[in-house]
Every structure is written in structure tokens, then in C-alpha cells.
Length: 466
Image (cartoon, rainbow, N blue to C red; front, top):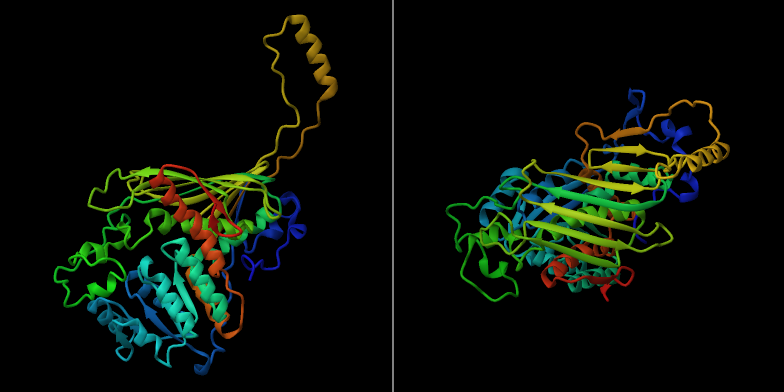
């Protein structure tokens, strides 16, 4: 595919003013009306599940059965086209938990090759640590197993290119698990942008802040964990062997050996959503700064990171600037949001709702004549009133529109339905390897920029550092 599924949208179709079409754009019933604001609820997608026979089920294998991996399985199983038949992890207790949670009959192993060799595994979910993403994905594709891969696509850009090469050479479906590309709120933002509802985009900003121990990756460490129940040697992959350290295993995101920092964990979500909305392939300049401000627990990863990204003009969007932030010590309580600002308004949104605020540049420029002499002021006022005669009062149209997802809406569920249909119905995936690389690239370069203390130039088309 190209960059994403356009869902039938074109700019020619939607370049209209919202004043006459706001009700038509809404996907659900009217909820609340006030003098200056309107609110709508979007409708969730309808995914019929009662027509899928047992023969059409996709039997899943899970590689990396931590919290994210098991959570992905639980979401996938909500769609009755999936069934879990095997799980792999390097920690015994997680395999036990998989049997407790998903059925005692599933096959479990610490060796992912044993899982991939099984004929009853049709596809895999990869929820392993970032430094294992490349091999787990490439070997799965080479075995003909479609892959649902947790973001970011890989730990570094070179590995990502190898994954994309394997995807292209095997022609086996690969979807990167940044679910915002399947979110109905993000699709509504895309629709409004295509309709020109904020004018010409010039600036975007996003943040993903946290204020909790678990949010800052202080994950629980079992008191009895040791090398008898963790395959530490396999976990280290091709890294030099060091003594067993449970923090490195359970709090792996904190360390450069295994993770990709806050940018690889969270910036990549924001990039994915933004690139889907704008049909963008990415920025050409990356600059980031940050530091370790609070979580002095031996980690490598900074807990506050700020990024600036320059997007060039393309056929799909004007040139604009993007700023991103992650703060793991946000005393206001944390949260996440994106804001797109244009010449005629702004859209602020998260995964649950969006608010469109429209504004119009005043037709009259106003007068700044206080420093002129009285005679000059009188002369200018007469000139001004001739050029801008008084107009008849007009009805004030609503200037704020809210769209909300239904209660209980789960965009990850929609992402897994797309994965199923890519396997069984040859549907295009919403985030293939190339899309995933272009979302991860600037996030990974943000880490490089802050460590090297310099701007990084990026070729988003060729997906390489210039």
C-alpha cells in the first residue's frame, strides 16, 4: 500500500465550508446545542462476527507474553475470528498466566522458533521488547506467519529496513500496532482537515505526560525471580552477557540495551496518528532536548523530552512545524492530546474526543492611529470608513464543535479487525512496515538528537538520515 487507507476521502470531495455541512459531517446523533457550540457522538464501526466459521478462524501465536502482549491477545479474542493456540515468553510465570487466562490447552515455550514451527499457528502477535522486534518479525514472515507487531517497528532504523525488506519479499501481511491509525476520532479529524475546516495547517503540537510509578515504567518485579525461571542469556540476544538484573528484564524500557526511550514508546503513537490524518511521510528536520529530572533509579532513558520537527510542503499538506513533549513527572496529573492549528481554526483531540474551534480573520484591520495628530486621525478615520463601511449585523454561527467516541470504544479492537481482514480478505493494513518505519524514524532520531545535541536531517521518502 502507499501510506494508509484513504477510506474514499479526497481533498476535492471535502473542500467545503462547515457552516453548511456540519450536521452532515457528524457520524452520530446530535447531543447538545448551545449558542456557540455543538456536540455529536460518533458511531462505532459495525464488525459482524457471527458469519465467521471455525475454519476461517486465525490461530494466533503470542511472542512476548508481558502485559502488552497478553492485553493484545485479550483484545484480539473479542473478535471471534481469532483463537490463541500458543504463547512464548522467557519468564515461566507469564506462560503459566497465559494458560490460566486463555486455556490450559495452549502450547507454551521459551523458544520462539518452536512456536513458529507449529502448523496450527496461522499468525503471530509480537509483544517482545524492542530489541527483539526485528528477529521475531523477520523469522515470522519468513515462516509465512502474518505479524501484528507492537510499536515501534524496531529498536533502530537499520533493523526497520530489514523488516520492510522481509515484508516485501515474503508478501506476508504485517501491521504495526499503533492503534490510533484505526481510531474513529482520528478518522474524523482527517475528514475535517480534508474539508478545510481549519484553513491551511501551519502548526501542530502534541504531548503525552504521566504522573505515576507504573507510568514511568516502574513495573512490578516478582520477589522470587531468578535465572531458573527467566532465560536471561536468551533475553540479552546479541548483547554482551552481564549478571542477571531483574530491573533490566521487567523494567526494560528504562535501558538503551532493550528499549527506545520515551520517544520510541510514546512519540511514535503521535507520529502515527498525525501521519494518517495528513497523508504525511514525515519531517525533514529533527531536534530534541531533554533530561533525567526525577526518576534517578539507574535508568538510561530521560524522563522529560521535548522535540521539534519541520515538515516540508507536499502534495498532501502545507509546510508546518510540530512540537512534541513527554513528561514523566507531570505534577498536574498527566494526560495526552494533539492540537492542529490552521489559518481558520484548530482541532484538539485525543483518542476519545475532538473539539473543532473555528475562527475567521476580522474583515477590518482596525485602526492604530493614536500616535497621529488630530488632523491626521480625522483624515484617516474618514478614509477608513469609506473603505470599510458599516455592515448589517449578522447571525452568529456556532464556532465550536465536539465529536466523541461511544462509551467503551476500543480502537485496538478495530486495529485487530483490520489485521484479521488483511489475512482472510486481503484488505490493506492501516499501518504496514513502511508506514511504521516513517512513524518510528523521527521518534528514534529524537533520541539521537538529544544525545548528540544537534539537529538531525531526515529523508522521509528514502527513510534515511541525510
